[in-house]
Image (cartoon, rainbow, N blue to C red; front, side, top):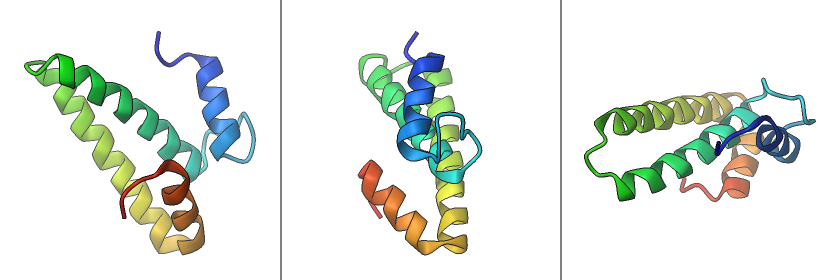
Length: 89
């Protein structure tokens, strides 16, 4: 499986406050970005997989909503996570 509990802990440890910090916006954005990258690679090989395409669109929307929330609350944390993940904007 591409996303097991060890990989989640690694992502949360790197971008969150601790390995068990699953609730912060930064850790959720990082997890969504990892999943988006995985689904994007899948879509490159499987163009006609419409259910995965729909899931990918939903994840991008969730990440965008979290980024908008973070931008409105704390612009410095927003800038830090965008720079760390290499997102445009």
